[in-house]
Length: 361
Image 1 (cartoon, helix red, strand yellow):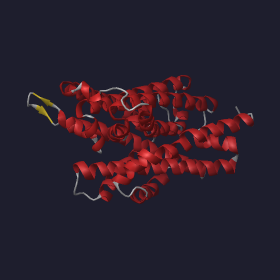
Image 2: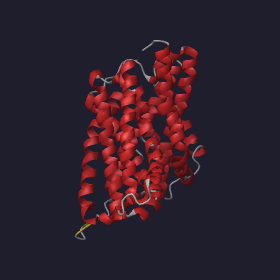
Image 3: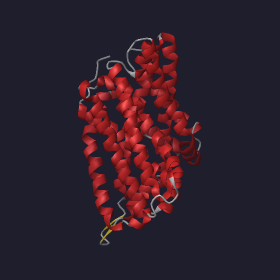
Image 4: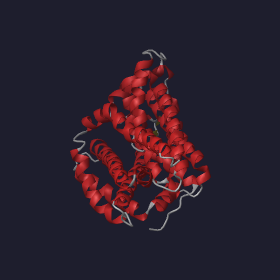
């Protein structure tokens, strides 16, 4: 299979849109529910930990610059043990792809297309995802290069239009509940999305500027994290803590608060566009990484024949693994951090230790 090439800027913007992904809609509610008016502190702490994680991932990239995570597994652990660990990693990325697809279905069936069957939304969205993944990571990155300025620009417009609605007293008193609620709120935000950045260890060999990849990875994480932070703070300042915590999609409701001279009103379409663009790139990256990883495990020359059968399985998995929106919210807030940390932190730490013991690095 022909090697695809990404530029530094494309890699940076892919990381940023991946971070925004589904988090822009569901994270503010989770943070406000735990940390109340101090949710912005939890977001700041999670962002700092996310940056440290990227520094750690950069160490892995430095030691295995030309190998994907799956290929590095076999190099470190040997062929058969490496394949077993890689299959486990594939299960993580594939389940995450099913979770993101479920987020899409839940949002559309509760906010926009209420009467549309969930399966139809899954199928229509997956057709576009399969088309994107089939074209390859280079084409995905070029599309990201086109759409990222739109996401950034629309978010900037949203912030400007909401400035008259801001109420600073909504985040007062500061540090009222102590540090424990902030810590409890931080954990889900670390799991979604920062620990999920492990998937870029499957993409980094395609980046052309290998010397600057650490800087590009950090830059993308900081930009995406700051955009999420702005959205979280806006939700608190405009909607208040109670409303943000009670609503499943506070960011979408946030845009309904815009009212400029009784002329510019209810511009939730802006949030919908931002979310649809960012979550598309998140899901297509997860789908591409899942298919690529599985193809490398079973030693296929091309990952593309796997895309359609994996798509069928994803539709079923999204309904079986995550039966309803309440289960999804509970899973993300209480369970996901432990599952994601297994693959996003413990596994790469284990692999680097084994590589050091075996004197591979």
